[in-house]
Image (cartoon, rainbow, N blue to C red; front, side):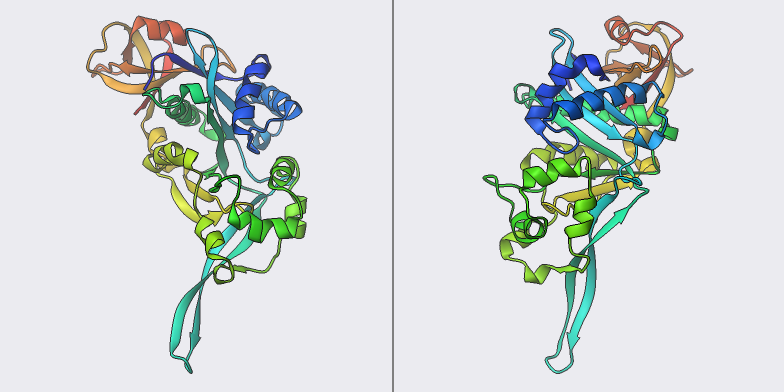
Length: 341
């Protein structure tokens, strides 16, 4: 990973740079919408500070800041609860039934997908974006900002649900997705961009227009069938990280582009299990020590995390390099969360 990036909480002061990230991603979690981003940053600031009246509305936006330039390179989001009274969590659920004919001697499994929803959904991870200039070449900014979310969740378990969900974007090629064109668009009667943007603030139109009857895979074109459960090429790194953490395909997909949904019990996430709260014993050499995401909360509502080696003496506590302790704004005797990677 890279030592040059600080992962921290985002707030209203980051508006212009977060808008640049939103333009790069333009998803329903981080859309290219100035009003939406302003509201998200305000809500994120209140969420980190524990000042959201309804905890299920909380959203935590983390940003990766280049320590040298103070420019933002990426972001990642935690939605405390995806699916609530005014905004249900929607998905297509896979069903398998047996079809048989004694006359023809046929007995086979048949796959179909049915629209489901819940008003009491899981915590969701989303909004992961890294600017093109910071992708690849050993930077691994996306990995760093993604894993920092787990370190935070480990220290604030009461803020999050017992299950965690990730909705991957479906596979699009040359601006086209066959599942959307054959299944969703005919029912919704609008462009994907309009439907995706509207779904960020209102999902009644999906429940009202989408068929309640099951959609049989056999009736779809080969192109549409091939899109079911297939994620975008850009999601490959994120999927590898999450699979290592314990996430699995839920046999659920997005009603729009059939992108796969992955999930896991919060308590079973390996990076949460590998996170400990340790007292800083002091600063010094950490050569050949364990690699970790190290997170501090120097004051209420403020989160700072970096990648570093950490020495952990047998008696407990930890030793950090002085430059790392300075970045984390933590002094001897303070508490840090150490997430082994």
